[in-house]
Image (cartoon, rainbow, N blue to C red; front, top):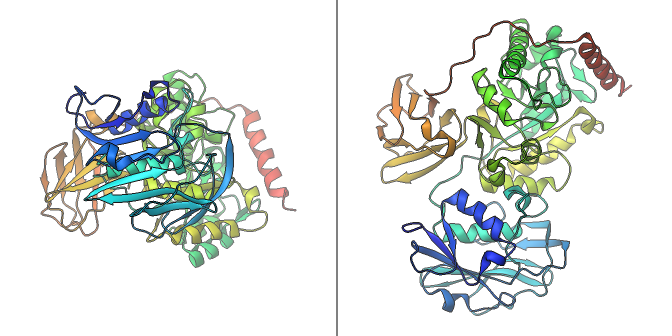
Length: 531
């Protein structure tokens, strides 16, 4: 561990419920959590576990940032109203907000000391504070460190219902210089509705004309995950509506036949390819008839998709997938990569970019805040039944999202192409790609670009870049490239090592007549439901 940034723990954490979480954070940040500083790397900060959080963290940690927390002692979960201070020390987007969250019950709040600022409090008093000695910040929290079991993931301690303990820890790590150098993508958002097709100007409770009017008024974008099996017919006026309102409406791909566990079954490689290529051919048929472009984005039915199918998606011409972290884990049990799910702006799984999405139930606004904090696209999804009382549910969340700042709304392909981390290093902008096909929005001070490999992308060494003036360039990873061409409209980069699309052998995935009948009956039910 020599040469590695380390966080020193004040007590033996090997018996702490936080042990599993520490291992996850070590994997995410490339750091170490240690008890003894001897024979270790650079000590970037101290976590002091003791008492009720009233220990003298500044004295114990010297000139390195510190976080003082009580030992893990919980009496269960409880809901609490938390008010964040309107102070620059409070991380975006929580600053100045009052939220309702589920937190670990603790015995007492903090007693404010001279020179301390309150970062968060409940009606009982302060629960998160900071003091500054010289240039060093020292934090105290009334909440114990978050903990996860061997079966859980990062997303279990950072989500819409529970995030405060993890927020305190992440903010401390960034203050200690852990992972703070890289900045998140721009704020981006979009909505998804599963199942609708272009057979009519409405589908169940969803009326496309009404959605266009609301999207224009409240500034948002809605993508419809359409089922390839449904492409046997296209209603021309509806296709024209989508074509004229591409800024507000778009289509993406929802499985192939929309059968149970369609993308998780134990297929052979040839069968997986046949299924996905059939979906692409059906979508191409829709595009030709409707004169529309459908995003090559997969939204698996019910969120069920295996690692093997994700690997095949890229080979068959798909650009990315949108799947919730919970669904990814549920259908890929035992995979090591599931431990960090929910932290990065996008995941790279088996070479396929996967972005998150969330339902319209639970503490949705808190979920949107956690996504904004982590740099994830704020993508909410629903079904037509969610709009039986009108499309106003999207209006409300769009207004909330737009209150966070300058938000980029677009189709799911555009959002996925903004999945990268960046930082300024001298006159160079260093990029950590989280996808194979990206559009880089660079700061004006950047004179060079350096594309860095991360995680699974380490083997992607060559990139093709298209600049705003139309010029095409080859960029090798880890080598600076001079930005002499115009970057005012961004730079499009594509990994040259992406596997070529699998040849279309025209061998269809077998479709039983009962599948089409089942889908027709389901659509009839959805349309008649509103009668």
